[in-house]
Structure formats: structure tokens, C-alpha cells
Image: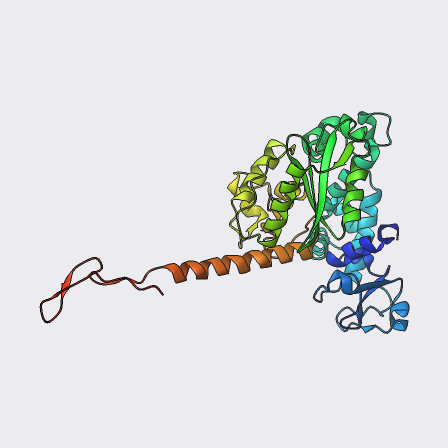
Length: 389
């Protein structure tokens, strides 16, 4: 319940079709007059057309009729969705990473069935979800525990070495600095509207450290302040505003080459290799996690590739949205599956326009081009001018 206490959290659940929201709230769409579950498979509405209700009865009284796809008035949740939600709650309480076999026993199904259901509904395996929970937990514990070592153990890492090997770089700075709220670190930022909502660009003196997408400027700024409570968070200077303009321009035309921005992003050697491979995916096309793993010569590291994509702090600049599941479906995206789908759609449309434009610019082959011909009367004629299609 606490996870969906705000409209922003509820909208994120709707955008991600999060089954954990089923039975907690419903939403109504003003343009259609329909009320739905958060996990409804129907086309996602625009944010400004959505209203949230604590129960389907409240939505009905407000004049919204029941969706025929997700049937929000049914008693109880979908069995598969309820099973996934129950296991998510278990994972959120576990300190150690549980074994899939044990989770399946709790869910009352086979390990393979639980794995498939998780990936179908959340786009993640149970282990990937548990890792996300643990990474979020370390961020909280670094601000509460008496030391970095204590925070690491409280977050569920068996040893400090496992934390530093896997997740330390995802913080974007040294754990000690992060724990102190990034004291004396100067981070300048700017927020601007774009076709995908709002974008925040934050930078240190060395380069861009964050490009985040969101629904409104205040929530993005609040997230930055919450993540670095003791840093000097200041408005961007005039020369840094150019960085924001470049990012916004690219969001409006993502099929073009991404802006050449100076980056100040810490990453492991593995993450750097993954992110570099992402930059070589042509706009308008996609690659699977397994294909990226083979590209960097780590064919068995598809899951690690997925974690590297989830750790990407620079939306669009590092195009993690171009990576999909092996079946072509959209996997989890830090800034919402709706934005991922929209980015890919814009890229495909732009790439198709560029291809048509190039085809129209190609000259037709012309016989005798550049030669001098004679008419029947023997008078010389000038060279033929090639025609354009």
C-alpha cells in the first residue's frame, strides 16, 4: 500500500503495468470513460487523461465504466498476478538472495513456471527483482548506518567485496561520499519539458552525471535532492544550459546521432563495454540482451547486461532503450515502458523518413552521360543531364 501512496507512484505502476498495484487502486481514463486495473494490457493513456481511485466502486460513482479486458470489478486479483505480487513482498523482506526453488515452493508452482510468469508480468526474473531491491536498500542504509561496512551488511550483501564488485559503481560516486550525501560536491542541473514529459540534466565540473526522464519538474528535482542531500545543488549556468538544449533537441529527433556530451559517470569495466555496445545499435533498430552479451564476448552474461542497462544514469545519451527481450518484447526501463515504446517508435519513423529521402536523392542511371552525341543532322549536342527520381 505504501508503494502506491502518491499519484506519481500510481502512474509509474500504470506505465509499467505493475501487477502489484492490482487490488490496491484503479484508474479511470477521461477520454474513454473506462476504469482499469494498473496491469491492464490495453493501450496506455496519456497522463493528463488519467484519474486514480482507491476502489472500483469510487471509479464507478465518478462515471467510469468497467474495462472489458482487465475487468477491474472482479473479486480478487488474477491468480498469476497475485502469485507474483506475493513473491515480490517476500523478496522485499529478504536480506539474502533467495533460491528460485524455495520461492517456487512458496508460490505453489514449479521454478520454471514462476520464472516465466515473473518475466511476462514484470520483465524481470525473481533474482533481478531481488537485486533491484537490494540496490535500493543500500542507498537507504548508507544514510542510516554508522559505517559503510554496516550499511553493506544491513542491505543483505554477504561481504563487502560482493558489494564493491557488483553495485558500488551504480552509486555514481564513492560509497563514503554517497553516505554523507555528497558533501561539498557541486552539482548543477536544469529541467526542461520535452516530448516525453520532462528531462533533468545534471552535471559536475567534469561533465554530465545524470539525464533523467519524469512526469514533472518538481519530482525530478526532488529526486536529485533526495539522492544527494548534502551536495551543493545549484541551477545550471548559461554554458551548461546548452547541454540541456542538446538533450531536448535529441529527444525530439532521437533517430539522429546522440549529442556529444562530456560525461562524468562512474562505471565498472563491464558496464563500460555494455554501454559502448549500446552506442553502436543503429537508431530505429533493437538488439537483445543476449546479442549484446555476444557482442562484448560474454555470451553467458545476458543477465549482467540487463543489470548494466538498468544502471545507466544517462537516458538516451546511452541508448539502453534499444535493448529488448529475446522474444522482441519490451523489458523493464528505468523511466517507464511507455517512454521506451515511444522512443523506439520515433526512431523507426525517423529512420524510415531518412531512408525515403536518400532514395529520392539517388540519380537514375543515364546512358551516354557526359558524352557528346550527334543528331540526325550531324550537329553536336551537349552532354545529357542525369534525371533525379
